[in-house]
Picture 1 (cartoon, helix red, strand yellow):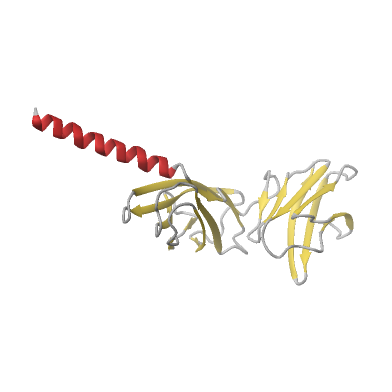
Picture 2 (cartoon, rainbow, N blue to C red):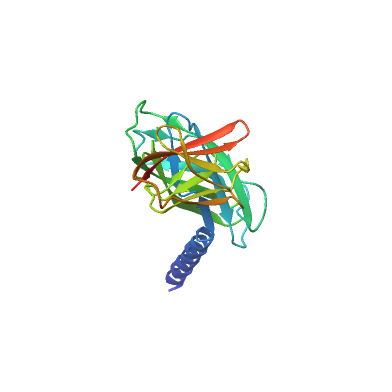
Length: 224
């Protein structure tokens, strides 16, 4: 009977530990959870990890896990800061393209792993899904560049939206050009957002030009 009680006691401790670890994982989040990569221009990806719980998971290791590395792989491992309790952490990872010519709109699934060895407690092993879209082409609902510019919807209808939360601040605004390079619409990025009225434009391919000094971002978009 004593042996049985010990087994039950150990089981309950292990079960409680698993529940506690899972509750901590529920307080861990990574952004972005969908990453758009251009094989020509993007060689790194920056991820933002946030922890909103009350435990201590300082100095956790973070890394990517791929079940299929035919297209890309990321070997880098990073370590979070030494802050106990809620924190935000960003890290940049090098991308290795295993295919020199990845087909357009290729999707690769991965897990962003957050591991804490329990010193101090608790031990956690959290897997957060992250999807990579490589060489995105016109037809994606949203496009996000490495510089933090988000353009949607694409294809667009009577309105095209542009958002950015990164630097530079894009004070010169945004311009929409046709295939001949003529200006057809423009807008300001007030507060990092711009809403361009495109109701009078005919269907076809356009180029969104976002400029700040010498830094230029060009996004190919389609009017339905």
